[in-house]
Image (cartoon, rainbow, N blue to C red):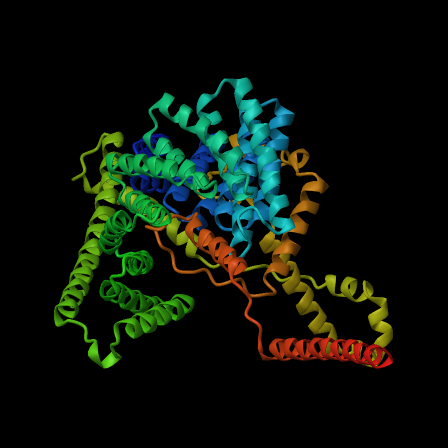
Length: 620
């Protein structure tokens, strides 16, 4: 049999192996080891808190945000219980970051503010800087979400969006001052980049360029190619709005070059998209077509249908500008088919109008056009290939999971000093894991309630008793009903209370019982914290009363800052201002009537003058 001491040791060793895998970038393997460590359990509260934190972070990187939230909540509960203020602050910060990704911005701000307050209270400058940065990130993300669906020109923002983004810049500036004081150059680079992004959204393009150049300098200093690529792309975006198209193309070329060095196809496609649109603005249509075709090929390779549709639309416009209506019609029809497939109603209307205009220009009808059979055959083969790839990916993922679990077992056997073929040790481990799983699945029977709360509930609402007939309220059936309601309500409240005994992986012993009972009372959050949380919850309820705007389909090969749609709106507005307003029928009628009246006045004046001349001549 495996000794309890060796099993206890294996919990820490499993956690260390999980940490090593996560640092190496294998988050899936890391979570498997951390989960195994939780299954083994430990009485060391700080070790368990660290495992919760690591598990939450690993699930966050795997984009399993529900599980990340669950483990960060466990970490916060445990840190609060043992009086670990620094740990409580970090757990609050991690919760804030996860809530931000889930779009729960008001709750995220409360958690990040808690992290900030604790860090300032403990004199933790690094934690304070991180909390300021996180609050800035939450405000920036909230401002970006509020911008969705807005049709304003760049910089012309609704007041609430502008206030949110200005709050973000304030927190980023405080973070920048603090990391400069700490001499943290990497953190300075992140702050400069986020300040540039926020000023870009605010329409302060000159300020944005200043901050992005600082970001670029620090990225080069550290040899951070990914950050360097982002800085070049952001500089190009800001220069577009200042009308400096030639300089923007230089930055986009550097973005493209670095994307290829990093073997990042998504970023390569985005750079091609940006270059294609910039050359369109420069009226260099042949070069624009070259980059749009590159974008189209990558979008097809990555099965990004939205990106394909955007590339086809751009290609159609470029060919129209060159006078090649036949090619333009080819891509306009492809754009129309894709919009129908993905359910893009606005894009479908635009594409349909383009197809009709091009058919009219070419003098052809719908019956004259027929898709080539080779296109359909190729599409069918592609679908079969994609289905096969998906099937094999599922098999591969299953094998990876099995391999990870085998690694966990093999690691355990090695640490226990036992041969994996030793059946006794294997069944000891298996029974330990399975017993904990069976305990989790057992149903807990509540003890019957005494029913005293029924009277309290009735006495707490005298105004209601005055309105109801006493004969009804004193019946035995009614008393039983009140007892049943009170009992069920008390159970619901008990279910919502935090119970450290329910934390996974926690072994309660005489050694840690003192830390779990009675010590957490003085660390309870202040009333202000709960008031802020209540406000956030009420705002979430208000938010749920109306249906949120429908988000469009995701297009990985199209930049998130799709500023070319904004440019098109700005250009369209300028063209509208330059158009001559033609008079309608009523305006022409009014003008004719005025003209007739003026002619009558002139005629009367001439007749009067002629009559005066005649009278003068007769008198003479």
